[in-house]
Length: 262
Ligand SMILES: NC(=O)c1ccc[n+]([C@@H]2O[C@H](COP(=O)([O-])OP(=O)(O)OC[C@H]3O[C@@H](n4cnc5c(N)ncnc54)[C@H](OP(=O)(O)O)[C@@H]3O)[C@@H](O)[C@H]2O)c1
Image 1: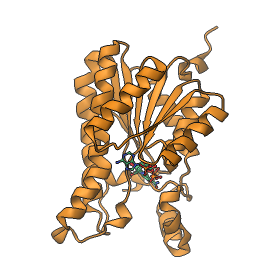
Image 2 (image 1 turned 135 degrees about the vertical axis):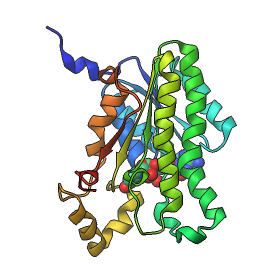
Image 3 (image 1 turned 60 degrees about the horizontal axis):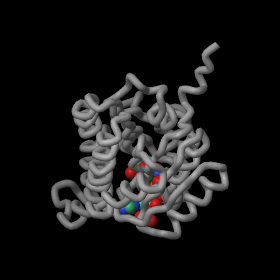
Image 4 (image 1 turned 45 degrees about the horizontal axis):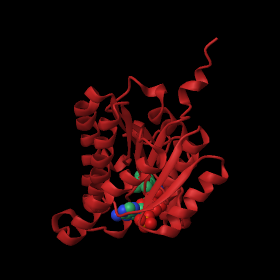
């Protein structure tokens, strides 16, 4: 009898997680390692990348930390080259660099260009450059591949809180997810995105310490709680594995029903 759980196994597959030292990225590194993938973790801080790689190894999977800036094209080529050198192939790229929305809140009519560039670089360019490098390796490898972007519900929902640059970047990631899916299907490469609302990570911890703010967020979510990194694992395993062979160009909201109410 077929064991359909095998659809989600990633034995012999190699994943590059850009931003893998972060709140979401490190949890997803452990999840992918947990189903058998070898995981390469890229980030600017050696300490954070090494710590995440160590946790993957402790869980029994192979892992490599690569110090690299996702906004630097040379670094992006190198993070892919080091991954392929170490593990022999590249099957999956998970783009988990981004955030910073709350650090750049400005009225739309006077959004400062410097802050605009910073947030777009952090959220959009940091997804584009590593993906270009990774997909070239996947095309050369001739085994297909998986691209998974981390977007945000802000890519599809406006909010009257000064988020212009962040919503523009995440909206562009959603558009690129569909565009890349269309262009790279001929190589057997699927491209999807997960689109969470607040996920309880260090990046949003300070915000969520404000009980009034947290209660307001929770009141808008039909499932009446904040998401956790564990809530993302099922979708990540789906999109990174053979279980999603015929799914591409999709943006899956993981938001306790928030977008269903809009
Ligand atoms: N947390 C949430 O509530 C939430 C909700 C919706 C969507 N998201 C999205 O989820 C993604 C991850 O968020 P998170 O909460 O995990 O954030 P995080 O903890 O800040 O993680 C982001 C990681 O990206 C790395 N990074 C930043 N700039 C980089 C660069 N130029 N090159 C290489 N690495 C870089 C950082 O490590 P280094 O500083 O070491 O480079 C950091 O570890 C973001 O795209 C965010 O927009 C988060």
